[in-house]
Length: 281
Image 1 (cartoon, rainbow, N blue to C red):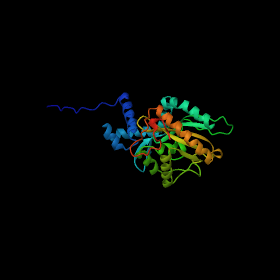
Image 2 (cartoon, one colour):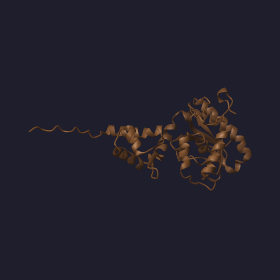
Image 3 (cartoon, rainbow, N blue to C red):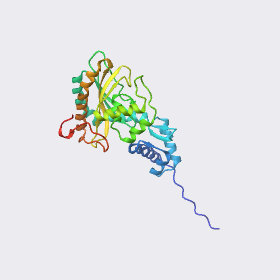
Image 4 (tube, helix red, strand yellow):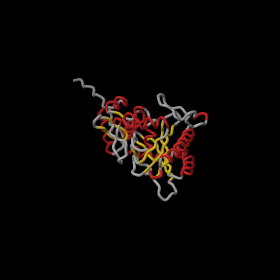
């Protein structure tokens, strides 16, 4: 009797292969912030079952978040925290620090540096004010992009798909002054895009005021923000008008040091006039 030829079986994934698959899944979120199981499986040529197991493991460790209503995944708080740790050792913090020292000296208030990490903003550094009553921030913790000056400075210049994702979600209140209406937030973002500056009075933290401006990378992509912040009682209209140009000039200087040539992505108004020629306003 003739024997049958056995069907070759794919060997079980080794530890190295499994780790590579996990890394490949995470790296996809650098290209696009939101994915579904089918899209990941198709892109990486993996079975949906394998992708689902990987994603469930990442969700359980807060590296990935799952949106049940859309059945989509996005980067989670764990990744934001890891990203903050890595970014704190990279060029953004090193490049910004001398400029931030100058801004702190001019304003005598706390100045901060934030980075865009996934769908969140993370404080990388701060130079606290020497005044007895001052504001300080929590470095390394992710914050949402709809609340506060630094967040709005980033979101106003973020790619349209990222901005839409934030606007499509619920906008939770952190204080009575948090902007929770989509229409109101869109109006505030439009104003920030027009002026290059975001002013916040108690939107994310009760009693805190801030004036923030965005930072750009070599290709015009928004990479973070800087802010001048302190007790809201010291941030009246005259002070915010004075701090706005100072924050904007510092942000442009840092962006130039990061390689920005003054251009922004297509479709984004540029309030930073003639930056390549050396004039920020």
